[in-house]
Image (cartoon, rainbow, N blue to C red; front, top):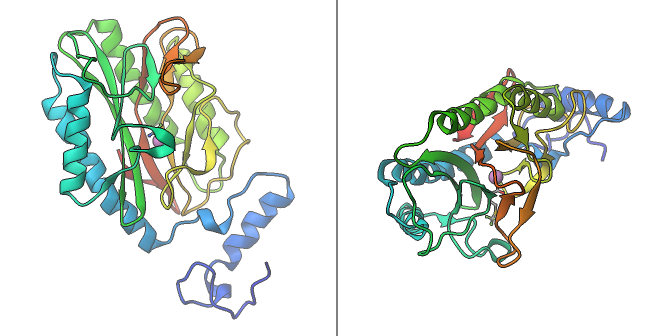
Amino acid sequence: MIIGRNSPCWCGSGKKYKVCHMDFDDRINEYRRRGHKVPGHELIKTPEQIEGIKKSAVINMACLDYIGEHIRAGISTQEIDNWVSRITKEMGGIPATLNYEGFPKSVCTSINSQVCHGIPSDADILMDGDIINCDCSTILDGYYSDSSRMFIIGNVDDKTRQFVEDVHEAVRVGLNAVKPWRFLGDMGSAVNEFCRSKGYSVVREIGGHGVGLDFHEEPWVSYVSKPGTEMLMVPGLCFTIEPMVNMGNADIFIDADNDWTVYTDDDSLSAQWEVQLVVTEDGYELLSW
Ligand code: MF3
Ligand code: CO
């Protein structure tokens, strides 16, 4: 669509197009002409939308903080679901996973060799030496936040503790590669190189995603991608960095009974941390972590 130079900008700022996003669009179109994947206007968040996402993230992070303070050996993962459900509702939000494509709970709880989408249950009791990812996502006033953290239960051996820390570092390595007018593949390859250098492998089939006005928006975000490929990162683009990293090989399978929970094929441990960010003029701003 052609917008007149003096027409109001598509971003809703009320400014004329020529003094608002015209140069921005020209720059994006240059990349499009060269054959790159570029974001459409619908993926560029306005300052008002970013504020909405941040308010949603306050609830998201309150849930994760509470889990961190109360998680321990002997509790069930259903108890974690109860906490997230209660806190989210008390703070006025809606758990985004609940009934999402049939997912039955308010949080994903993935223990040890579970890669992601673990379903909270009374039958799953945390034990000393376990590692667990709790993946929390919240809707507030239509705005989505999404982040996850690892928790260590009791006494975990040094190798496992180091693994969990390294996977957290992998997210920071990815964040350092988030710059406007660079590519998602620059970030994904940085994550993959780092994980491989530690002897781990990154899951290929499941990645991150755009998020904000919907739970899963474009782009799909790989952490095994190549530099200079995948979508162009531009200010206002909002997505997650959430690599799933296995101590053994990268292969996975899905639980045939519940059709949700993903496991490592070789039964090795898997860890994941997730942050949600928006690309800014000089890098990124974290929205949920
Ligand atoms: N936070 C996870 C993600 O970003 C949640 C998946 S949706 C679920 O993909 F319903 F499967 F849990
Ligand atoms: Co996510």
